[in-house]
Every structure is written in C-alpha cells, then in structure tokens.
Length: 418
Image (cartoon, rainbow, N blue to C red; front, side, top):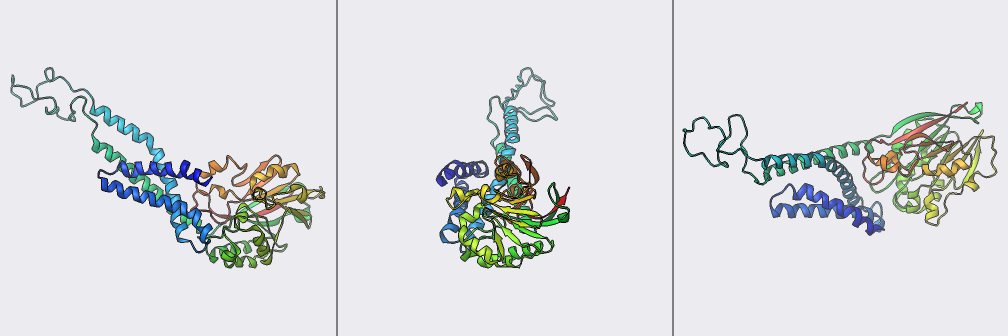
C-alpha cells in the first residue's frame, strides 16, 4: 500500500514540479541537475517524515518530520497554484506562437516606406522595417520565440513559489497559535429544564507528537479551564506516539477542571500509538475513558464508543449496542464518537447529539472538499438521519504544522431545553 502511494502520488507530483519549476525555467544542464537533486531530496524528506518517527520514535526524530511536513504543505500549494496557471500559460504560449507564424505582407505590394528611393530594390521581408507604430513581424513559418516561453515559465514559477510560501507561512502562524474558542447552543428535545444551559467543553485532535511541545497541551488546558464548563469531552486523537515518548507532554491534561469531570474516547491515532497503554495513562491523568459504555449525569445520558480503526486493527471497534442498549429512552443521549461518519449508526440507536472531531475542518483548504467525500459533516453543526452532529476543527494539527481556512478550535457546547 505504501509503495503504491509512492508510485501513484509522490513520484508523478514531483516529476510535474521538476518540469514546471526546473526544466521549463532553466537553460543549462548544470541548473537542471541542481534542481533535480533538490526535488529528489525533498521527495525523500517527505517520505522519511512518515517513516522515521515509527522507526526511531516520535520525539527523537523531530527534524526530519519538520522538513518533510513543511515541504508537504509548500508542495501542495505549489501544485494547486501551478495547475490553476496551466490554462493562462497555454493561452499565452499559443497566442505568441500564432503571432510568430503570422504571414507577412508581400513586399511587392507593400507600400514604399518613407525614405526609400522610388524604383529601388525592396529589402528582404525578414529585414524590412515595419511601418511606424507597428511591431516587426518575423519571417513566415518562423519558430516561436523561446525567450518568451522562458519568460512565461519563470513568471509562473515565481508566482507559484511566492503564493505557496506565503500561504504556508500564514498557515504555520495559525496552527501554532491559540485555538479559537467557539460557543454553540444546541437544543435537545428531551433535555430537562433543570439542565438548560448545561455546558460541555469539546476538544479533539490535540495530536501531541514530534512537532509539539508541552506548551501545546498547557495552552489547551488553560483555554478549557477558562470556559468554566460543566463537563469536558476529549473526542480522540490526543497523541501521535507512545506514552514513553509523550507522557511528559500529556501531563498538563491532569489539570483539566469541570464540575462533572472529563471523558475520553479513542481516535484512530490512538490505535497507531498503543491504545491500551494510553487508556491507562488517560485514566491516571483523571480523564475517564468511555469504551463502548455510558453513564448517567444528572438528567443526561453520556455515552462513548471506540473509533472504527479499533475494529480494523483488531483492538476493539465501536459497539453501539453495548453502549446504548437498554438505556432509558426518556433521557437525551449525547454520544462521543471520534469520526462524524459514526453518526449513521448512532442515528439508528436514537442518539440526540453526537460530538466528534477527526476532520480538522479540512486543515488546509481545499482538503475540506476532499474530506467531505467521506464524512457527512466537516465542521460545525449538522444533521445525519435525525441525529444532530457537532464537529470541532480540533485543537492541534497532523502532518504539517499548517492550518489554512480551518483554525484550531475548542468549542463550548451549551445544551438548551426546548
């Protein structure tokens, strides 16, 4: 699977970038060789960013992921910009090519230029001066001016480079900044009046990993505690590494405070990082895992199911029957499930509200359009078969420390009685 991705995606994309950024913009073999080496080195760094942390550990390899992931972000926006420029590039090249091959008027019928003696031998068409105010025309069937093609190629490469680096720089600032604190009111038909205004702080996709530090988790804890929530919901993808590697970064999560406690469900990345040991560590930090189970909080049923990746990897997937079977149907159900797509099954079990993450809001526009092909809700409040679904953008990032069009967020969900 991995090598298929390399052959089908990474290779052709880098070949295209080499052609547009190096081959089309240089005129010497030495320049093209240097460019080719640079493109190959960046492609290797990109692949290494995914491989090396798994081999030598998340924290021991932060330099390689940083280079590879940053190139991934720049590469993505280079690719998008260059593809958008393909149409004007083709139009400009064809326009100049037509002008270059346009027929020249017959010298015998052309008017005599000012200053030419009557009866004198007319100059050859290729050297005859043009009429005043008009550009000179090349000889019929002459080749298109290569300098103009070079100008177009270099202009496109410079524009794409500046655009990609500018967008990436903005995205880095957004991703590494404080999460946006959102607030949303969601009515629940079965919510008792006594719980009107009940507040749940929702955070997901913290993604402690090789490119984050302990300040990342401290910042998140400060933001959540400042919300004065009644309950805290951590909807998966907390880590990208083992407890041994990231335990110190996760430690500030023990300082989370709310009236009715903090609760956690697994995301797909927990299963890539050792879910069993993280479930133990999370509980040690004072956050209760909900593994296909539920509990009653005042007049509310809070349930949690495992991520679908647990089933795919043979470590225990979601079990909605276990989590929601034989419950009191008069009470509203709030379900924690990492992926929005799990709402289809939740709706069959009469869930009133599902709280999810996973999508990162797309993280880097236009990835939100791609994510929408798989997930029913990408960001914010939606509905799936009668079940309300709220999806947070997540408080961290995965891969490139870049967010464009989808800033990190933590949401205060306020439940309202109807």
